[in-house]
Length: 378
Image (tube, rainbow, N blue to C red; front, side, top):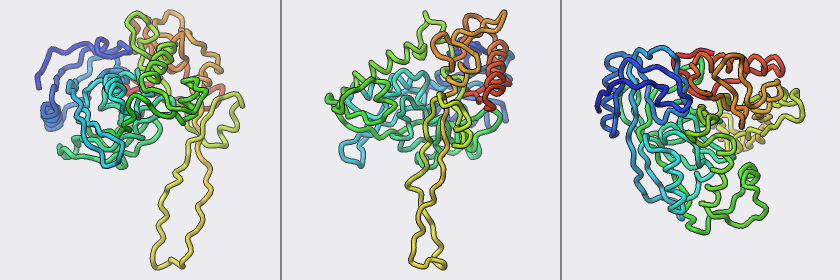
């Protein structure tokens, strides 16, 4: 690892806010990353790791601690125990979209719908990244991580990460701490080997995004091209010439509510069921087992509702700005808050609070921020 002169976080994050931290360290290998983390943990310093900077909203004041930049990269191809599949182990600092491009070129299916998502591979399991109905949990096998509590490096199966809608036990949600404080070193995915013929697209959300009108297989590179074009039209593919891409992506999470709350919303509000676990295990103590297995309980599922629809129908239109502010809602997508040029973190936070208040007043729901907030309060 190497200590470097601190760089302004505004230069390292896609939202382009944040002062230079007190101290900054680069870690180019897994061993360097582990050593840097153990050093700051032993010293009891404040710290955070920085990958692509695409999911970070940093404040205007100096972060009084150490920022560790994850600069690792590399893809290792491994055999899969499942016929017709291949595993890839990827270093945490590897660019996510570069990984997607590699898998598409190699004819490996499973993450092609997540083309164009900015950031690094190590951040992907933390918030269970997904797009158009495809999520990393569908292909994630395990992660290698280092725990803050012990400093030990362990390999953790995906099943132990508590993966849910844009969450995991590793995620730092606004207003809370992660259930498990650890840093991912590498990620292993299990992908289908489909070659040039591609695969049949079954998910309704992805079929709609691709405008598919047939049930045959489609090439992976065609899917990637269509997804990149769709995301670019929403300002969700980084482009230095497009101020709408100076954002942290979707600033607010889609709201997860009960069916009763969803029914109280206007019928026009887009919604999607959050499917219950149909494979849940029923454990019956041996001493009370009478030879009969009770039927599964019919529990109502939660519902995901569109935060973008809630924002626009609370009167916040695309391109909206507060008076005298350099922060604004994207002109292409209501969920993205953008830096229109030189905006401070305070200006963006003010806009975020205004949107939260309007949605809460109109629909009774408090939208939660998606990015990790450092030195900022909403």
